[in-house]
Length: 430
Image (cartoon, rainbow, N blue to C red; front, side):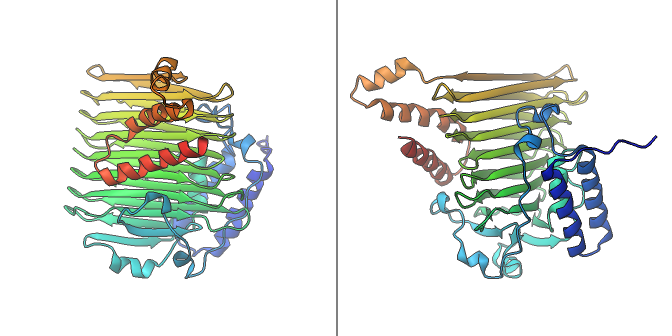
């Protein structure tokens, strides 16, 4: 008896055709070809995730992605100098690593411009890494990224200035961008990574970006991601984190743009006594849809994780937070706490919270919580009684609510820059 032929949507059919066209274009390297074929086979078997898949229950990609935009063409060699990267980050002094339409710009010159102990390269394959698995979004990223950019920080190197990965959509019409970056931080090394995503308004761009960060023993990394894509953008992103023995990592995700976005995080404790902080700030208005889904996998003993996500939802916007902490049987002495809090500023706004714990060890301290509500009328009255207009009083309370998620950042300059983004959103709201 022959297996049934799956019914494919228009978008799924187009994505598979794009893969066939891209495969003919790329170099025939055995490892890369094998990884791409395996990834596309995973996608072909499952298709776009739908609401019957638990992790995508609130973000039905099969329904939301009706058409797949054509793959973006490689930009010209001068494209990187014609765009302004990270304009919303103010005057933060960073080493710029610019991607235009998914392609790394000025790759040859970057090697000499980066600080000592930091190297960058490109490989044509997308070999299995932290993110690879059965997830269809990751599978598409593996299959359709033209190359993988590797960034390595040597053992013991303390990078003084942040490294800024700037992903820019330079589009005059709908297009799709796929890119993969792997960052490896050597033993005892430390670095601040900025990751920004920008694109034009009024154009239905699509993106699927994968970033992997592997921190070796005793390494330290601070990672800040800002989604400032255009108001019609459809954005998918995946972050993979691997922490070695006594490694410390902080990752902050700030959502400012995109019509539809899903940011998923997979964090694995690969060494004992590692520490992880995951924070998030979301500012949604209009009819926007933003999904943050994370899994923190405590696979080694003595690990500590903290997650704090703050979301403000206005108008008819829809926000989702799904967080899971897993504690493996041998991961004793694990300490994990997760919190999601949301403010709803209109009767039509919605927030879906789904925190989970899966604990298979007995000597642990773990907990989670979720809150969802409106601004405190008593606090508003207190401010308004002192002559502050209602809208301004609301802004003060919202700024204070969101600002808590920025407090763990070590850089005052970066904290102020992100606080400025919150203030700008509040000004536009008023």
